[in-house]
Image (cartoon, rainbow, N blue to C red; front, side, top):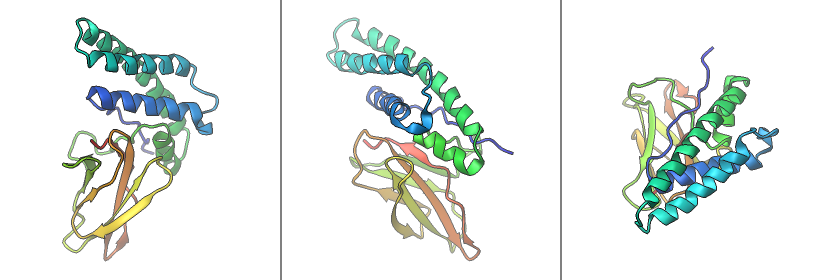
Amino acid sequence: MKRTLVARNAPRSKNDFTVYAEVVALRLSEDPLFDPRPPTLDAFKADVAALASAVVAAATRQAGLAAAWRARAAAVSQGLSVLHSYVQGLASAKPPEEAAAVIVRAGFSVKNARGPSKRAFAVKPGSTPGSVRAYVKAAGSRASYDWQTSRDGETWVSIASTTRADATFEGLLAGAPAWFRCRSLTKDGASDWSAPLACYPR
């Protein structure tokens, strides 16, 4: 049986990385699914708070502050690695149909099972503020596609189906994580929903 894996795809920009870490800290602190809490969570939350302060300070461009941010970011990255392992352990103990939900509820994304090859489903920030573009591998010349978005990985909202293998989501909160999934519809019926992917709109 293939395991459902936690993706290690934290955003690269300072602000998005900080928001990403804050979301993980919040989810693991408040969701009863993660009780008892990971033993490293309190230290991680302190590192995230220090990182948020360092981001603000680094914006002033004073000498030495960029180095301070890098040190804080390194501590948060190490903490994320430990929490990845914690969430992976929980997900691996669940049936496949429940494992993805555990990962998403923790604030992480599900790793695409296809590995380094071209993703069957991908999302990225759109060209306008608060928008996201989603793409899926075409299922055939007569296929259509259903698309959904979620703020918490549990409650899903649909947008209009398309006959193209891509869609635009608009009106999203810039800098806040949102999750997306899709399925194709052909003459043989509807496919399973894709594993959810997270994106941070600009």
